[in-house]
Image (cartoon, rainbow, N blue to C red; front, side):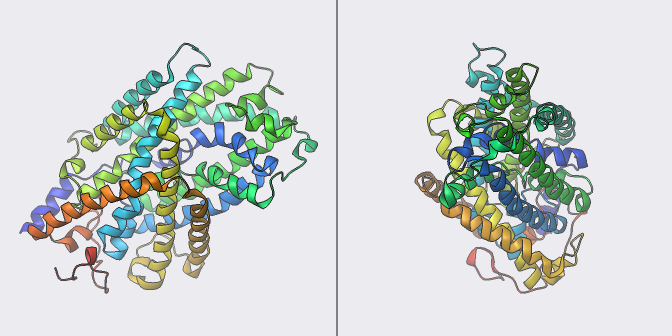
Length: 478
């Protein structure tokens, strides 16, 4: 009887599938372009020169491999929380999923702050006296309200921003394509292998939102089709946009160091060929890109504490949803408050973003490993997937895992001083709720038979037929 009550309680806290295919794609593409397109493509050249174009392609291969891994697992587990849900449900272990995603929450909140400050910076193009911090806080407040009104309003507004953003980018790159001079790509490599590798981490950050659609997986309509379309299709759009834009800006500017030193490299490049006011065009595009990124990151960032609370390793308040709009309002309000506060802590945000990138890589590597494990050890789950990659799953699996390990070897420096204490705090939180659950005889298996955000009448898989890893290292029959 207690299990039935708990199951009903989770259904009452489920989310609404109100996001269509365009909204899911817009979440991946428009939610990722903010820093990647308007800053990173230019500044990353400081160590490698015009070969940024090639590094973008190679980073894109890793990103696409990771997107395929997420796409496949998302059709098995169309839940909120992506990595957390995949790892916990495959390995039947809440701790593994929690460790893989705890620092992502900090990363999401910091990303909202940094992108909001970027919005304020681009607003100064039109209103020089504006304080970027207060402009950023205003954006966070507006998008907080939109997200509070539910997934449907989020999807409508993100779609509109996405369409406008695509138009503004095409206004830049299409005319520039016809003014490219091949000689500007020489010399192509300026920093050798070490320089190219140093550019790989910031350039991979340009793809960092590839799994954001997975965070809102419980809100996407027809997830078996639309989640792979958003993740893999959205990543392909990003690769094309990044390579096209990079080919243009390095092909029209004779000296790549000018781009590396510019705060707005797209504007610097556009001034050489655009008959319009290049700064204004790029400024408008930057406003759209940063706003859409903040919007998507807010929608994604509230899902992790929601999932932890759903699984009873975080305060239950965070999984409560508004009865009318099905929004996890406590989780959203916490992200709003912390992100707003972080906009005043500008001195430490660069380091937090570095930690966020490091944390993303851990999550992406964990998901890539999980995809291969499912194929090898959980054949009953493979049967639930919307498509069957067969042994080919090891190609994106190994590419994704190997790429993450390589990038982690470059990204960990400077991250440990905050990552380790933050992880320690998370482990204390987890241990406290695990202990409370043990005292109240929480049925962990019953929890893991649900999917975060998904009503039980929509998803009731038989996941416990196979031998499993006992949850949190305790006996399986606890």
